[in-house]
Image (cartoon, rainbow, N blue to C red; front, side, top):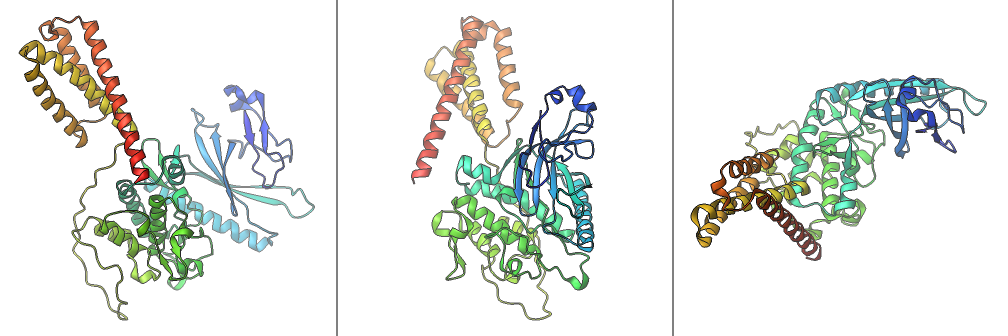
Length: 460
């Protein structure tokens, strides 16, 4: 097994231990040490980092296994290493802030299913490699989300469609509402911090830059300068107070980069101080106006909450993009809540192929059964097409999905199997070959049309 050293700047962080390939030895072995720098590798005698996931200016993240769990659960170990030679007072302050952040993550992760859970946080103190004060390493252990972030999806699959962006808005805006209601500003929303798990569910990650404003003195919430260039609004880059609309700005930048496939700095015109993204793609006027309002330079002119964005998305009309400055002490009139209109989520590739297989298999069974009853090929085909069309329409409305695609063909095949009259004189083996062939042909045709559609979309 390969175990990764978490000491910053280790010259050879990858360590291989053949004895750890045995799960029994892995669970009972004593501490292992880096062969290059001597750093303890099994953190807290429990977590074994096995892969570097990412590294930035404030630390690193590692994929690890928890050997104290029955199935050797995978998790993410995040390391925060204060930069520079800190005094004892500064180091104590960093430790306090780290503990406060861990408490915040534990609270919101346990309360919301789209935020990773916090499993542990701890500090390791070791002698320094240089003759100076001891080194202290701070660690968070979080739930591992197995999937791809939206930045990786963009690279792999190309630009996002409007339907996909609406799906992201519908899933992430309630998460932002949840954290903002608790006085928490994420402050680092970008494609790489939104993860899609293998089952399609979206998660908001990386609360390392999280800002707790609920208990700040005098309502202050000054930015500490932790942000991603191009995604942060003016108030955050200047170190001023941050707001829920600060996150909405970064979220809008995230969405326009996903739809256009361009970097944020390529879409912003510094001369006019405006975002120039509409000419790059074609989207509905409603979505474009909403994103433009989220991207306004003045925090007061943006939507003030994620819930307002949801209501604007699914309301009959969209408010003007630029709003006049409110008078001092003037409170906005309450707006009646709008009932959201559900957006049909896009079909994943496996859903399209599964539906195609279902349609081909079921269509073949229906044609065989009808021909044995009617004996007229024209009438048989007409009735079969009507029934098959109804089944395909039911799939588009998601009335038939998932296990239904297995259950219905199984029941249909069982009926033909136990009622020989419906076979039209064909042996059951030949019927099975015919239906499977029809399913495979339908899958091939669906795949071909999908490839043609993607090719034409990229050209046009």
